[in-house]
Image 1 (spheres, rainbow, N blue to C red):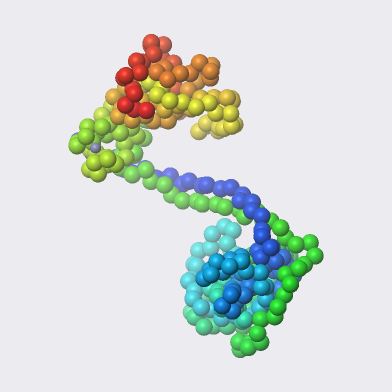
Image 2 (image 1 turned 180 degrees about the vertical axis):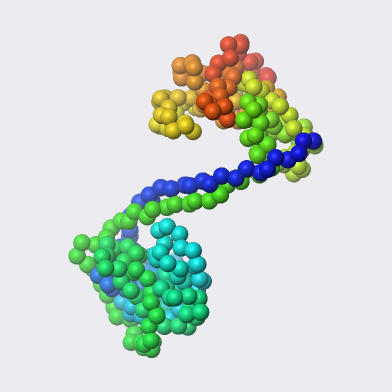
Length: 321
Ligand SMILES: [Zn+2]
């Protein structure tokens, strides 16, 4: 067995705008923030929920009994955030806090502007710091700040939830940036691809060859350590015609329609995914024999093209469908 190469790691980012419409309760809550008005909703049992929800968490009844609560509150728990990330409420270190606003029975998650963790404690009094410009979003609360006033005992005030020009939808930017490590088996697989070789791993129990390897056989639950070179040629087992524009890994536009296929490389125990090119899309078929066309940098198969061999007999790949 060869020495294990250093496990690969790479930064990955998934980012997209998430657009959602608001029902009557969330619309009133966010429009209220724009108007510096904090709204909650009263449950059947009489509890006041801030932020409000549309259905009673206990009875599942529809909730519409809106009430206004105060912009002051009490920290119920917190965590210090020493390294704020892009898009978080404050650019300097701050505390994430759950704040029970005066008049509410539940707590709202937000940021607390404090000089350090020593300045934060459960039970401390805080108040809303409004954003200078407000648009009907949770960011209309810039953050919370320490406040030395006592808890108000005035009950929540009924509110009809009506505002001029209510906010009816929001666009929430969703972003997930993380470090991906493919693990031992796929690191070997990727290193081999850089040498234009496709290497799977065989299960010692059922003898199935996994490409790409997963490090373990999902059927038998045992580690796959026996490395097996497969391909480079293979057989199209199934395929679909894609009409949605896409780009390849080099960011080049792929002409539509194009074909994406399951390809059983010779010697592999299951099919992998690959794009088929070098043949009109409507001539791709089950059993078509294909070979890889490597990317310009030689690190991976960009797509597969017909190898020129006769089509494979159905019986040779029917178990791999
Ligand atoms: Zn197995």
